[in-house]
Image (cartoon, rainbow, N blue to C red; front, side, top):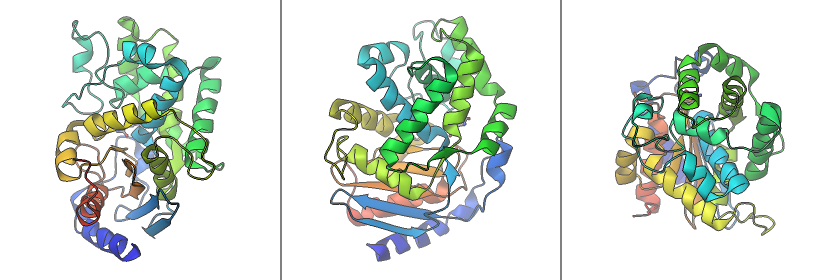
Length: 305
Ligand code: GLN
């Protein structure tokens, strides 16, 4: 397996020079843009890592997977999908245009920023501090890593430059999708995006979803199966924003990207994969990361289709 992962990294390296780290959150530029890492966890408990798999990065939009899961566990399907839809948009992740369409009345899905902010508003807790504590605790639980924390520098960078996200949240407040205090909510969203992990953490999370929410170590249910299946379906249709169709065709694995350069991938009943490569394409997805997953999907026959 290590040899296959080495080859996947060599394949990915051919593409990293075509992209750049995210610049709209200035702190995210402080990376080595040619870094690439991959980590795999199989459902029989074997783990393999190659390249910069120990390098920490902020999970950014990958947090939307965890927050959707927790929101569903907190509130059930009807309440969550009463606030946010499950349809792909074909629009960039930070788009605002469709929020004004009267017939929709809610953001199209929980993987775009608008839908994610609405989902975060459903996390139970007395105020923003308790909400982010619960999200962080959940991140520690699903990654089986009690040391997961928030990168304060990235968080402050998001606070300083997050006016697009504020505008999404205020717009949704005006239409009634968001009912709580926008300033407190948006801080929770910036903090969840600033949670730091490495490829190993992502692979372990992926393996948990692949295993229908049953902990591989203890055999205990951490996430109900119906929620795992729903979240993996939404990852498949919306996880790479307006590149989700292309990714489904070329790779065919439920996955979620973030502008920190990570991608979380869960091959149902097989393996969890974490990849990292901070050079992004123009849609905000890791160029090298997509190529690594495409290579692994071909060689290990991982497409779900
Ligand atoms: N924090 C980022 C933002 O809100 C997350 C976006 C992403 O990873 N695509 O813009």
